[in-house]
Length: 350
Image (cartoon, rainbow, N blue to C red):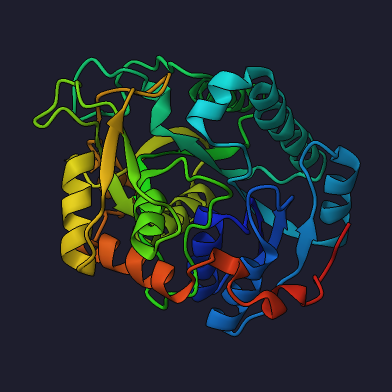
């Protein structure tokens, strides 16, 4: 029973691979390594003491994608591959629409061709746009406000239509809130290229001395301290949510959406203060203008996932900050810290 994980070398993908292997699943991992590094895959194998094939493949190359299905018996897919930076999507909308949507269409075509109809899709809370109220339920209006969110919303609609055309499909749409933290070992974590788009790696890179100060994007939102409020969830909790969703798609058919969040919102300044307490490091910051496409407050009502998936977040903010700092301290240059580790031969390289 092999699970294909697209985007499996990424931040969420690598942690999800750990949890799937720990749950006894066999894996096949695909990633184009545009926003990730193979070293994360090597460390997943190290931490679990398990082997699995890895393919350096882009979903836009449907012929290479089909080779994976020819060479492996795939029973289900967890689809995490895609571009994910809100600001970049505003600057390069066509790039995002082509990559995220076309890649998913290719994946669904090949899945259909090989009779694989169990899918867990990595969606996003950005599909809710500027929410009318918080906490956000799965029945809240879907009104994405930036191209990244629009790609997730469009893919959700594609998958809904796919099921309507073929009722054998079983699909879980996981609407992530804001993953932070790292594996407790310190061996896996978030390793963005360039200046981070997400808050926690920005903070940790300032703390380690890689960046001079944190830039806070706006302080005039209608929140307690004026900075943006988000639902931060430990990446390991999020990864475990994929395992629960996978177990659900084995048992049912249809399409269903689930919020994966804690149900509690924290402001940017609250996160900074919590990190300073957990790490003992002061974080210098400067407030600049808000980013295009950003919103003031966004946090989940996660009760549906608790009832239907048997899942809920277990880790608190202190643990999220502590694990993120452990990762950064042990890996000050990210996965490039030990360059000799990155030269190992890939299992399969197409």
